[in-house]
Amino acid sequence: MAHTQADLLAIADRTFIKNYRQQPMVLTRGQGSEVWDLEGKRYLDMTAGIAVCCLGHAHPELTARLTEQLGRMVHVSNLYWNDQEILAAEAITSRSFADRVYFCNSGGEANEAALKLVRRYQHVVAGQPERTTIISTNGSFHGRTMATVSITGQAKYREGFGPMFGPVAFVPYGDLEAARAEIAKPGACAMILEPIQAEGGIIVPPAGYLRGLREACDAAGVLLIFDEVQTGTGRTGRWWGHEHDGVTPDVMTLAKGLGGGVPIGAIAVTERAAAGLTTPTGGAVPHASTFGGNPLATAAAAAVLELITRHDLLAAVTKQGEHLAGKLAALVAAQPDKALEARGRGLLRGVAVAGNASQIVGKCRERGLLASLAGANVVRFAPSYLVSTAELDEAVAILSGVLAEAPAS
Image 1 (tube, rainbow, N blue to C red):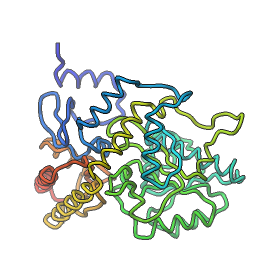
Image 2: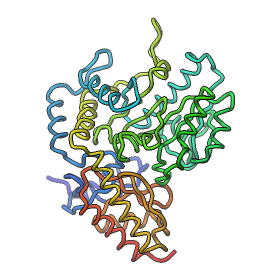
Image 3: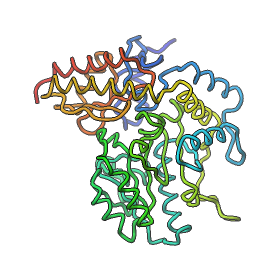
Image 4: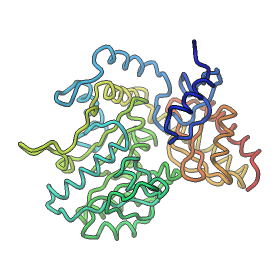
């Protein structure tokens, strides 16, 4: 007997730890930028799994590639090489500053690996074990592991989990002088930040900020990590979000869109930084992951990067991102008391709203639009790179209608 949506929601209510706040529907299939729940209701998906399903749902070429890999090999341990992890690593390094890659399973794991790398680099390679302080930014989000939540610059994520990993120094995002002051301290190990603060509210940094950080880190012997979990793999119209600023990090962390929906994470690093996780002759392996480099996940990553290239989707992201930016700017102009500011780059966009943003997102869902929150008051759009102009127009029209009916704040 088939379960109804109500049946499944009741089972979920009694079986899951209630750490999430899922919307009251059960999604069962998707196609492109549309998804359907178990009752057959259609939703326009402007979240794409929170910037994950960059090729949309059920992309035929990605599906075919994954189906082929399922029939060949799903998993083999890191005691051996597999062809897909090698091809995926080459696909990343050939499109980036990086010389070497390490694969894991998520963005949190990628940032955790990056933290271990920079600590060990300073201790073992640079011979400066006193350099232990991680510099992060207020409003940042870097993951949910104990270390990554410790460096996340939003206190609400750390509540009840102390004592935290440390030492960590937080500075205002975009404040170059504050960052320089921390970087110059003798205990500074590395600075980590997002090229655009995503979960913090789609905050684009001021011109010259990332370049200034690069120069300050170089002068002080501090490593620079760019968390590109959300901004990477083409999301901003360039392969990597830092390319807009003409700088490169020592370490870049990746996940989300890299697998097109299949869980995967990675760190991409320079040859110099790679020494931080290099296994010494006869020594213990400094970091590892059972599922890291999994053939299915890395086949997905290699396919995603190849498909973005072959179909010129960076240009599509730029074009559709500009269209979405224009529609959101027009919304702000039309309802300035309720839509306060449009933000973002490429297809990572947001509009700050007055009033209860969570309720606005809920009302959008009721009308068939899936959007998400970023920060306290930003409605985020992170759709598939293949989203159509008509779909973007439909999404903004739904949001506009919801805002028009919202009470004045």
